Image (cartoon, rainbow, N blue to C red):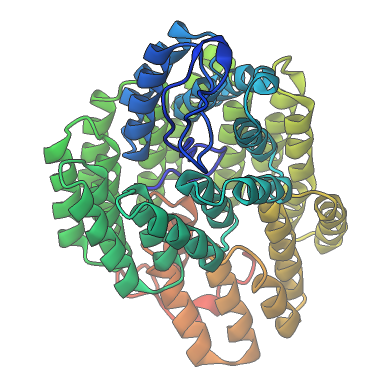
Length: 508
């Protein structure tokens, strides 16, 4: 399992240091070249280190308990708050805990301050600022493997996988037994299409910590990607055998089953996950898994019902950003159903929920505001209103150009590619879509449309097949694409259709 970066949930924490002295100052004997750990309590530090070890093994719930103990023992323990934020089950709790770390950032070492500052800017969607902060951190602590890992994670989160690998390999030379690095290397190589190297990294990960569940879970996800579904399920089962509480492995098994057309069996697996869920974060993950499963099956009404349950969890605690995200998903679902009016209403409400919140910071509100022209353009596409789509695309592109968010800039290219595709300007569509998110199977599908328009049937067929066989974990866009290809193939459950299929769905 890789915890994907919606917010900086991959806080790999700080480097090992020697015990600290009272008064909040790091001990003079702190390990050379490592970021200090500032706390007035040796017991709090011990709890923090136990939590960090659990975090690096992605045993998130257990880690949360240790970090909670650490801040109870030392209410001024900034790094413990930072890492506790990364384990929180809801967006609301994440931001509240991160704010506590930020409030204490002036009382810690320079390295700790940079770590906190990097997490704060990442939480506002500013990838560019995060890069600069972590580059400064590494410049100050080049011998700290966890500082290098943080910079690697920043590159990874922005899909700069080759650059991420450079940092992970530097860290591995310093600490060859730092197991989490091999998880990150495995995913980095996987996203670069270097599956042999990815498999080697995951097997090394298993070798280092064979009594932990995540190495088997991560290797299972690679096997899922390669279409080796039975082997993938076996490795997910191994993860659960090691730790029955590692419930996300149920989600992987469900995806294997969904991709084999066994959607009811997939949802039974997720029901087991939900029955064992320990917090709302796990419940939301399971409900989203059921949403995706119903879309694979073509039952959009049941998919919407699962999103309603997900929204209710956020509504119960007033988690505005989670609710906004759920409404945006509902808007996407409505667009796939051809209901532009409902999509527009859901998208408008997604922003209104955030604007009305008294707890969402202004920077996060601004981040959400930037999405509205993108969403409005998509609604315009659904209404065949190309003029409005172009105007909204221009507005969105201008807004995101001044931001530091990598993915919103990729979305601007996605919109421009769709506009070029609708105007049958296929070369421009290919150029723009080539700068969109290349891990989104919907963009791969759109590229297949552009090549089909150019008359390059072989390339169109290859891209359509790759889009339909993307085999990524709990991916709503993959479910949408597979349904499109299935319909274009005459409702026949076979390999995704090629150029004939792509030509029949040019409105997407």
